[in-house]
Image (cartoon, rainbow over all chains, first blue to last red; front, side, top):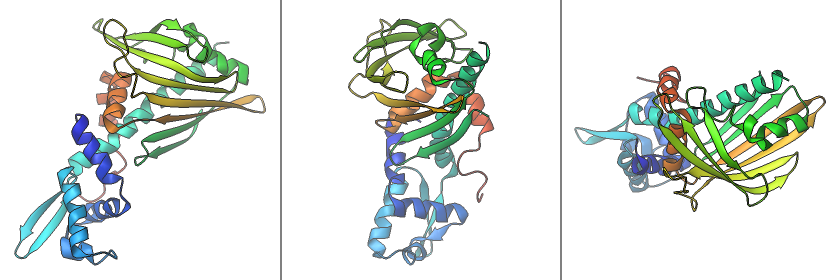
Length: 105
Length: 164
């Protein structure tokens, strides 16, 4: 994941509604109109949030009849989450090495 | 278990790490202050760090490189922005080119390390703040290199196995 897509992902996830949309469609795919019923905002506003998530490749839309079904793209989501996990892992290892260094006294 | 808590804030791009060591505050301070001790823990065993400069005063610079298994070098810098020995250390942290010149001094990662005594033990609280996800990614790549791939294989991420 290079810089720009990574920035788009973090920007997309910086909004509480968008995080909630992602959490919902991870559980199961939902149409934009079904999603819109969960939030106190217009259909158009929810559609805009979905578009931001789509540009960050966090979700994909699939047309089914008149409905647009929103799916989570687990590949990209996992990569973003793993980036923070990986940084955490660096510090876990550093802490273990400090611990060892101190134990040698 | 030395690590007691970890908090990741995707929104603010911060990582807060709390660890406890079985030693006094002065002893734990030394692992930061003394370059020879610092280089024993900063880089992983496969990418050991060598600090060529470690000017441990406010405004002081550190220059280091990490050497990979193929002899390749990854260079970085620190700049100490606040010091209150032996309790508090703040520094900016970034990458350098092959000549050791900082390439991103205007967009550093900022870290605040606080050491507090807890009986005979010392609690270290480390807050790291990233400018953007790009920088976080480069930190991860530099800090882990080959270790990264291994860790990614092990960790299933925040999302675990939810709905597939």
